[in-house]
Image (cartoon, rainbow, N blue to C red; front, side):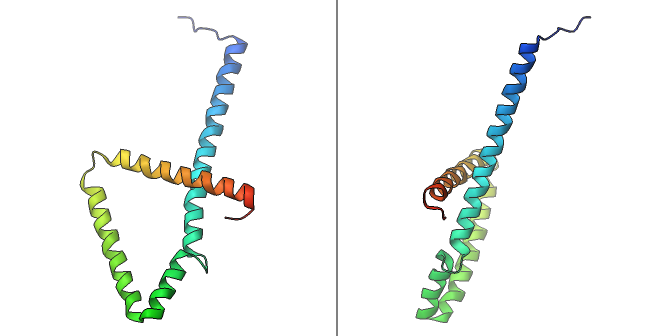
Length: 118
């Protein structure tokens, strides 16, 4: 049996296509990571969303902060239960979450380019 011999141009084309696919995959993963990191930064920075929200609750009543913590824990547990209850559609939901973070990463990337800050 003879192996088919690929021409030099076919090898170069395959190598170029492979390198472009790898570069695109690295960019997509980078944008997803930037989306997750940007969201976490916006939420947890000292004057971020979470600290402002907790400070407003604390100013009204310190017990509201505890109530908010318990409600968040209940929501996380309920969300985990609902998310893992039906395993058939989990890949579509996972893809939607990944694409949402990809879009958010693109937003943060262009905002970083234009304004120089997240």
